[in-house]
Image (cartoon, rainbow, N blue to C red):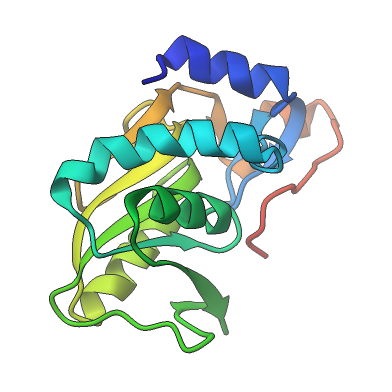
Length: 190
């Protein structure tokens, strides 16, 4: 098992922490962005990190692992691989979270939702709502990083390998905007 400081060291090693002026998928602004894709592009590190998430949920015996596209695709695959169950992902279609590619969730299936980074919990909650609307039973949410410092709004228990608080700003009151710093939108949500 990895400690939070070891997870942070791995993220720093792959330069996944970025400083600047960022617009998050939630619409909020901030001065720090965690780009887990820089970690997940390294199979050895993805395996190591996702093993910890898998172990946290092994006793719950999920039947399926799902993550939101894009950030949760590799996490869902690798956690599912380690648990020996299928791994799928949800996508956006006309602004709604849906299953495509002939993916399905059977009523009563125990489903684990996974994510790379939780900021507000919106992406995870959309996947939870989708799973539940199809009759699946969400057993929890696992993430690499919870940057909400534990304040994300998620309707089921969730855990992250690293929980940190970062500055989030309403775009209308963003001090970085007032300084005229260029805004970068690195996330996947349009």
